[in-house]
Amino acid sequence: MSSLVLPPVSGRRRRADKAARVLVGAGTVAALVPLVLILYYLIKEGLGAWSWDFFTTDPTGSFLGDPGGIKSAIIGTVLMVALAAAVAVPIGVGVAVWLVEFGRESKLALAVRYFIDVMTGVPSVVFGLFVYITLVVGGFGGTSFAGWKGSIALALLMLPVVTRSAEVVLMLVPNTLREAAYALGAPRWKVVFRIVLPTALPGMVTGVLLAVARAAGETAPLLFTATIVNATTFNMNDRMNSLPALIFQDVGQAQDRLVEIAWGAALTLVAMVLILTVIARLVQRRSRLS
Amino acid sequence: MASAPGTVETPRGSSLQRPRGGRLPDQLLKWGLTILSIGVIVLIAYFFLRLIDESRPVFAETGFFGFVFDNAWVPSKNLYGALPLVVGTLITSAIALVIGVPIAVATALFITELCPARVKGPLTVLVEMLAAVPSVVYGLWGFFFLIPKLRPAEQWFSDTFSFLPFVGGTVSGPNYFIAGLILAIMIIPIVSAISREVMATVPSENKEAALALGATRWEMIRMAVLPYSRGGITGGAMLGLGRAIGETIAVTIVIGNAPVIGDTIFSQGYSLAAVIANEFGEAASDPVHRAALIAAGLVLFLLTLFVNAGARWLVTRAERGQRAARKPAAGMAG
Image 1 (cartoon, rainbow over the protein chains, first blue to last red):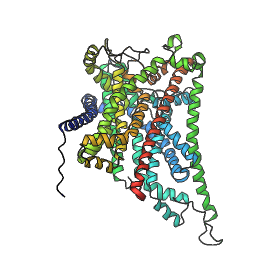
Image 2 (image 1 turned 45 degrees about the vertical axis):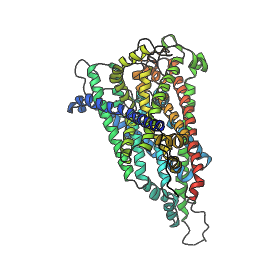
Image 3 (image 1 turned 120 degrees about the vertical axis):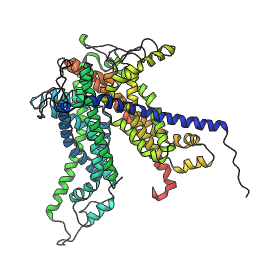
Image 4 (image 1 turned 90 degrees about the vertical axis):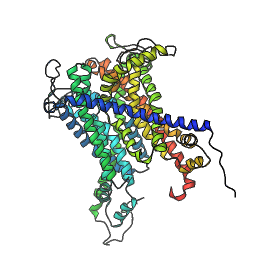
């Protein structure tokens, strides 16, 4: 056979290819520009506010004198998110275990999956509203606004994320492991607790950390449930401050000193969230299942 | 599939038989988890019913359609027509889709088809970092950076293209466009992630076939990648739309919070989510006002529910269709 000579690609097609590549590249750059700008401004404006006092004093809310720091907000965010995780993680993982080990493709399991999906789509502000009308308005537990009510709102947000990610990881646990354990005579609960959960643990940690990172940055549900206060409290039955709520309030005031605090708090919050995200990704990379 | 243990009959007295009490923890685990899972369904159902119940006072005054389609939100006069809020939510979400989806799809295409393998990972992480930035930080940045910096450009656009519908007049600081732009940035990660996932499922045979026939890279993308992933991309865009509709704090900070329907995309407005965040404090003492805000939450919930249900349907259909299409080629390996 004689060698096959392909006709050269016509100029018009070549130009179209080039133009499309440039456009796609430009779109990618356009997606990254805001990220760079936000991080640049956060560091530029926020780092100036950082100091020892910034982290160790409570905000005063005053823009004439000393606006104070963000101590109560950091403590509030950490406490509320921790309690939210303590509620959402066992429930979320439990539902995921049920879906994978017991429910499988049954009608009930499909319904549960559907409702979990519905929950994923519910806007965070609506969760806040729900906790507000069920727990805050009626003064449930003796107080109106309280830190633990904020945690409940955050837990509702985290639950679908934890369940979904845990389910995906549990499905990746090889069936041969389960079968081997059953063959050795292990009862079902032992297979779940000693074989399935430990194998899936690293992957589930990733999902949980991502859910925690998401919850830490949420503002709307906390506004109606824990509100905004200045003083530090460790009592979850009290009104509690949080970083997002503090930032929101200070932006609303639009006073230079408070805005400076807001930038500093925003940098702190983003740093916390990014650290969690990075740890999550590192754990994921270590995981054998993925 | 692991089969349930204990179903195999073992001879009485055999050492293989499970001790009598051994079944109890299994049953506890099974029913405990089942109850937990049913609890989730009950919770969501209760959630929905409670929202309906609590919003009843305002529906009693205006009716559901009166609430959604009346153009007057004046809590001081006891007027609760949510049309300006609904319109604000829809306009900002539409702007977010128009700006965000092409950028997200371009990013996904670049990562899956065009960029060198070495930068794939880092680029993916960078785009995902956009999702890690909290909403309130987007609001802060939008308010103190985007609004002042973009205002001259918006004014120029408004003056130059005033013949277009919904463009023209004086640009206000916080406005629909800025809110839409922030939302666009916020939905890019999710739309891009889903598009990337669907594009990764395009069989390499299809792409190689296009290339082997002499297609350029772009022609390969247009003929093999895009048609194959269209359903998934649409689903991803709808998930982004669901996010945009429900986004609260960032929008509250940059939309201007004026409960009227703005004349142009550069006018101040309001959104369903923003009104809830802003007014719930004043509404605490007024049951009808509170009911109106809860009704706004209910409308928001229903909107996102429909959008997300549509999105899920599209994404699963796209994924299923692809799995079915791949099966004959992949044989038993699939």
